[in-house]
Length: 342
Ligand code: MN
Image 1 (tube, rainbow, N blue to C red):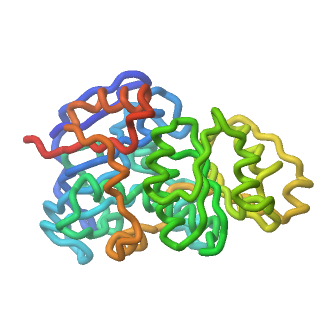
Image 2: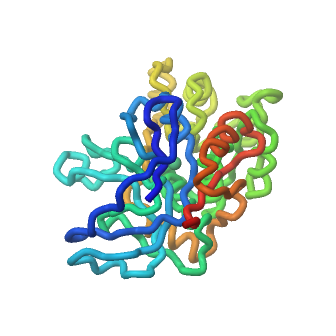
């Protein structure tokens, strides 16, 4: 079978590997059908993900078909269409014991710390598989992982229907958070530096958009909130001055800041800005068993992934996909690789 592997930073190849072994107890053999290219895949390719090790089979956003089940598997059966939860945890540490397995002290993520799902077949633990409707197109089923990220961010920000939300970054993650916020009735202003992304955000229901190349973010947020400041800020750009501005100037009293971008350089805050308004500043990483929730969102038509997918291409064109992602942000939203060819 073929897999997409980054041999070392900057070197990606389609490699022939032996088929996975027969699924063991609690395991399931899945034939991958579609998989999304994520910023983190591109960063791993370029050697810019601080968590990655090499060589690495990429990919953590995927859907596929159950081919074979090992002993003791009851939640899926052969022929089921499944989405894959990419987060692996130890079950023993403090975070796991308190139900926060996505920040397990030895968390492992498919395609980052362990080999991923840009692969024709994978053996996976059954408890990482979630059945999706058979009439859901594969390329849309592969977007459920980003929606799980949105569900996590909504949870961390405890977003309420009557709150105002600023989303920083109108890439795929910003857009899935936008859809999630709009689905509960929150008012959303979203910022980016690429007009075509902001157009897409408008089409998906954003109440206001700001291109910070031309417009002042603080002024836009104050106009949007009648001078109150924003109730929830979702920071998904990873641009440090954006986070610094959020904390210093943009939040309402009792505001909540959710940090999704993860540059490693330090940011500067005044503790007084956090204290005087009792800001909550929370990280949001991966997803904490959110797949059942987002599959329900889809069933209830609270979200619509169709606008998210900008490109569908065979896995053999992964380098073209990576290049598009890196060099043409104005054209690209979510790129899906298909693994149908034999
Ligand atoms: Mn991703």
